[in-house]
Amino acid sequence: MKAVYFKSASTPFAKDALHLAMEKLFEKVNVVEKRDIVAIKLHMGELGNTGYIRPIFVRKIVEMVKKQGAKPFITDTTTLYGGHRNNAIDYLHTAAINGFNMASMGCPIIIADGLLGNDYISVEVDGNKINVASAIYEADCLIVMSHFKGHGMSGFGGAIKNLGMGCTSKAGKAWQHAKSKPSFNEEKCIECLKCIKFCPAHAIEYEDKIKIDYEKCYGCGACTVLCEQGCFYINNGNEFQERIVISAKAVLKKFEDKVSFFNFLMDITPRCDCCSFADKPLINDIGIVASNDAVAIDKASYDLIYSYAGKDIFYEEHGIDGLAQINIGEKIGLGDKEYKLLEI
Ligand code: SF4
Ligand code: SF4
Image 1 (cartoon, helix red, strand yellow):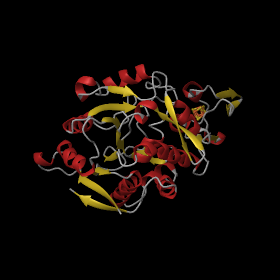
Image 2 (image 1 turned 45 degrees about the vertical axis):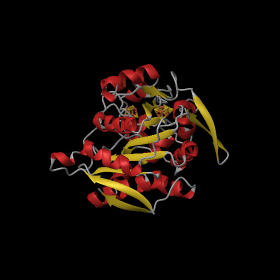
Image 3 (image 1 turned 30 degrees about the vertical axis):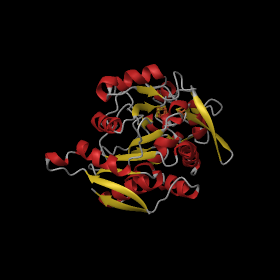
Image 4 (image 1 turned 90 degrees about the vertical axis):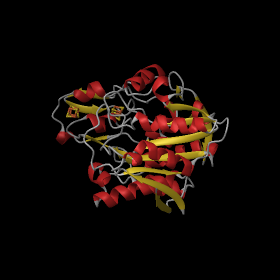
């Protein structure tokens, strides 16, 4: 059984403040050694999103890493689609607006897949070549900080998704999305034509009715989130999740026992931090969990949310079984879903 440490969001006294609890959680799962170059991977939020991990928690991890005599940097990768994080320049501007820069964090911020998202190291997993972002791959140690929330294509996103999608280059992301082209429900369409503008691949056309050009579509999923009538939906079984998990395994192949995970069960929004809005949380804040196992921490996060809500709020929201990524993860050796929850 893997250990998963839990700090409740209930903090009635100053001494229990959550940013201070980060120190205790860090000590429980610390794998950083003197002189290590440490990649602290997180999603710094799309412009307009307010659900991402608060900078104070990240700053605390930076301080703890420095205390070990190591060299931290904060990192993420560029997006496949448009928005304000599609290249390193736009991402660094967005990160600064959202509270992440050298001065506030106390360490550099490096976009791991380079200026345009094409900088990667190819890693083979089960016959698949996965493009892991170079700056992450070249670090000695990886700390993965994940905002646990809903996701329109994987049900929910936590540590596994942050590894698999978040640590790969543009081509790596494209491979994961390739099997996820949306279907279209014509009956719901009110012909507002907004989707023609927001599709980054210019794959949506109007000729008497809305049509998807599947040659151009690269399955980014933006239309499934942005169409207010819910006309687009993904119906591809678990292939998207399977590819995320295989990609996560490629990232961990480099780090093995040099990785720690922190999941934030706070601001548990329906959709991911890639959206340019956050929406109200589906449930009250629960707390923070930490572990050295990606599968165990996501299973514990899911179980905690289920036990507080009394139901699978993510399935209710998206009709997608997010547990598939956990089950596939255990099956292919990414981690262990049996865990012991230890409250600090
Ligand atoms: S955004 Fe949705 S409702 Fe509007 S035209 Fe596109 S599919 Fe139809
Ligand atoms: S049709 Fe939808 S999934 Fe395909 S590229 Fe356009 S927005 Fe993305």
